[in-house]
Amino acid sequence: MNKQELCTSIAKQTKMPKSQVFAMLDSCFENIEKALKKGQDVRLVGFGTWKKKRRKARKGRNPQTGKALTIKARNVIKFSTGQQLFDSVN
Image (cartoon, rainbow, N blue to C red):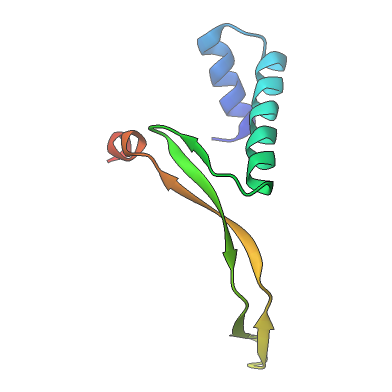
C-alpha cells in the first residue's frame, strides 16, 4: 500500500475529503520526523515504536574491486512493532 492508497482508504472510512486526509497524513509524518531529529522516540501504543540509533563507523569492502574502505558513522531509524500489530499479523 502506498500513500495514495492509504489516503483513499482513510477517506472512505472517515467520509472526509482526500485533500484533508493528505494534509493530516503529511502533518503526522512531519511530526514523527521532527521528533526523531530531536532524538525522541515515537511510540504508538499497540502499533510500534520508531527510534533513532547511531550506527558506528565500520570497515567494508567494495564488491566490484575488493578494495577495503571505511563506512562512515550515521544515524538510522529502527522500528519495532507493538504487541497488538504483531499479534494481528501472526
